[in-house]
Each structure stands twice: as C-alpha cells, then as structure tokens.
Image (cartoon, one colour):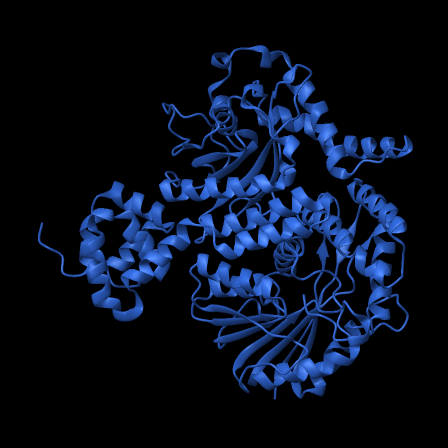
Length: 345
Length: 287
C-alpha cells in the first residue's frame, strides 16, 4: 500500500474494508457516510470525533495525529488530546461534586428518584454525545421472598435518546435470570452483549425493540448488590472498553441513591425466569389502579405510604403472580428463543 | 429559572435551593418536556435559525435549551448565564462532554447589569422567571434589549404557575405558590394568578421592540398522554422542594402541605386526571 500523506488518505485506505468502516462508525457514533465525507474532504470532524478516531485506531494513532496536526495546526495538541480522552472516559469532577451535594441536602423521599434522574441524565449525555440512540435504566433487586432469596429484578428509573422515549419509567417490567441485567447482578460484574442479533452468542440478553447491543454493570456496596445499571444501544458493538469503564463508574455513583439495607449478599440472588414482556404488560396494565388502591387503603388504616413504598408493595404482588405462572416453572432450555434473547423492553 | 429575588429584607429569597441537584435534575427534565411540548427550540419561527449567529439564554439553569441549540446548530454560538454557580458548572461540563465548543456558560445575575457588549446577540431568550419581583422586570428586559442587536429578537416565555388540572390538591398547591410569590412582591394583585402574562408584550414595547407577537402553546399532560409521566414526576418533585418556601411565607403549615402533597399524588394517578400547561411566548424585534 502506498504511504498516505494526509490523514484523509490514511482513513480512506482503512475504510476500504467495509467491516472496519462499520466498526469505526460505531466507535465514533456517526453515520458511515460521514467517514466517507471526511475522506473526500467534504467535511471535517469535530475535536471530539478526532479523539475518538485516534482511540479507535491505536495502531495508526501516531501517523494520524501527525497528519491531523498538519491540517488543523494549533487546533489540537497531544496534551489536549489526552485531556479530551480523559473527558470521554471519566465522569467530570464537577458532576461528582453535584451528586454528593445533592445527597447531602435532598429530602429523603426524593433521594432515590432525584439522584437517579440526575445521574442518568448525565450518563445519557456522556455515553451518547452524538445521539445515536441509547437507553439507560436503573434496575433494582426486588425485596427478598419468604426464603430470603431475591427472585427477580425490576426496572425502575429509565431515560433514553431517540429512538427510545426520553422517559422510560412507564415501560418498566420485571427481569429475571434470562436477562443481561440478571446475569450482571448474579455474577457481580459488568457483562456486555455486543450483538443481540447474534443467535449463537454465549452472552445472555435478548433483542428488544431498537436494541442492538447492551451492557449491564452491578450496583454494589461493600460487595453486596442492589441491582444494576442497564445500558442499551441502537448500534451493534457500542460497548467498547472505554464505555464499559464509564458505565461501571456510573453504576458506582448510582449506589449512592440506594439505602444500605437495599444491598443484598450475592448468595441471596437466586433469580427465577419471568414471563415475556407481552405477558407482563397484560398484568401491569392494572398497576396504577392497584397503586392508587394501596395508597388509599393505607391512608384509611392510618398508616399512609409514600408513592415509592406503595409502588414497592404493588411490584411485590406482581412478582408473586408472575413467577407463579405455570410456564415459568419450565427450565430455561424450554423457554422460547425470542424470550431468552430479550434483555430490555 | 434559578434567579434569586433581590429583596434584602426577605432573607433567603429563593423559591427552591438553586444549588440543589434535585432542582437541577427537575429543571433538565422540565426543559425537555416543555421544549418538546412547545414544538421545538424556536417554534415562533418554525424553528428556523437562519440569520441568527449568536444566542443568549438568560437564567439558563442547567442549560438545556442552549445546549440543544448548540448541538443542532454547530454554526451558532450560544452563551448562557445563571446566578447559580452549580448550574453553570454543570452546563459547562455538559458542553465539554458533548464536545459542544460553540456553547459556553457564565455566572451572572439577571437582575444586575449584564457583562456583555451592546448589540452583541441576534436572539436573547429568557424563560420561566415568573417568580421574580415585579419591580425587576423592566430593568432586566432593558438589559436584554441593550445586548441584542437592532433587528435581533427578544423572546420571553412564561406560563401561569403552572398547572390547569382536575386535581383539587394540585390546584390548591398552585395557589399557595402564587400567594407566596405575591407576598415576595410579584406581579400578582390578588394572589390568584402570577399576573405576568398580560404585561409581557408591553415589557417588550417599552424597550422599543417592534413586530411584537404573542404566541400561546398548549401542552396536554392528561393521563395517557406522552407528557403525563414527566409532568407527574415534576409535580412530585417541585411540590416537595417548594414546601420550605411556602412555609417561610406563612401561607401554609408543613402539616397542611404534607396532606395536600399526598392527596395530589393520588389525584394525579387517577385514570381521569387531566391537565394542561399553557406557556405564552412574547417575541419582538429590536428596532
């Protein structure tokens, strides 16, 4: 191959391989056509995309940087490059300060919802700056059953960028052992499925609407687990190492939203299999009515509940009903394939 | 949205703590809900930003509206300011992680002379500061006019505070907030309305704007609508965070507020809950 004299030529030679072109586009969170435009000198990347390009092609980093410097001169430097790289892979310190300050001052009743909201909004912006489409959801352990085992997880606060809706709270369902989230909670470590369309994948998780890849990181405190942070992307192979690290950092931060008693010994995690989303939706259609009745009854009994306490009670009722459904007593191998592969609604 | 009241006698003059992360998270959600509900960033011109190169967003809070413009229009420079250091730190951090080099945010008080040159913006925007004392409005609108270039736009968006709904508890809580604002020196004459909407156009006229238009928007957040869950959540946060303000103004006791709050939560859960928000935008061109 003739040696490229500009970064555009070098990039052009790299993306002659369609697979590499697709991979790069995913890594940079851009349309593949944009790569072609750069090569043809029809447009130029923003500094953030330049950094991602350098990160995505470590073997060409030096050559690319030299040639980029030739074209953009003082607009980028190696030092700035490192700073930007930090920025992409780390949560900004201002944000840690904000979360800690919020924790110190927030009314107790808003602790979980407002902290999750604050953190998820930040995660959304940082994990999807180019808005290619992700959903981030806090998944929490359901309280232990009578034998002190955690039998399922429930989606709680969720936020998304298009094609997902911005607020996913109303689409919450229960997740079980068959899910990527269940796997992360059971193992106590991040798990990712880079291609949910891949039928032969050894990774758990199943293909929800718009969902091409997903990662879940456990939310932990002192080795105990409260749930996980589930992130879904509309792009395959979206969860490269830097994004996985960032998701783990956000999961660590979200631990602050939980009460200490909500963290469980991993030996208590014995997730069952929960029904299809469609089946759950039928049951959950009465959720609000039950929630309202639960709160009214509690008030009548002179023991008023907050909406969050009432929600927990109603979710427990649904859990008991859904895990008791006959088909859920089947083994995992007997669950239809499309069910086993689903990781997110 | 997080600008303080400038009343020395009143001690703490904030409706809610502007440094609170809960308020920040709420404002980010609210911004998105309202911008979507109003039909975009600049619906009065069908979201057409042609001829606009530099935009000012006053009392910008965490910067949602400004950041969205910066993302969608890389050729437009957007400057936001707010009195809250926390909001500005957050907005600047957001601009950095999103790689938005055309957005910047500064700490500045809307109620004081602005540190910008004359005629330096093509569009100056302020939204949802209806809690500000009446006496401060003409002064800050004059400042907006000073920094806007001739032919540029000044855009003010406000709403009644702020739910029209079928929930009696929500209506009562609203009235308590308005009453508290009246006590702090707002435009309200009766404590039943904030009183700001009828005078928005005149505020623009007084600073020499022409081609003034008043455009109303309707956001339906009744049960079953796309906006419902976001507004329900916003109400559950805002009427908790604003309670200390209402108590401080001696409009209601904490016990009364606790009962009303719980009642509101229940009423908003009902299938027959209906609610509307109706923001009004006044926009004029600087002569």
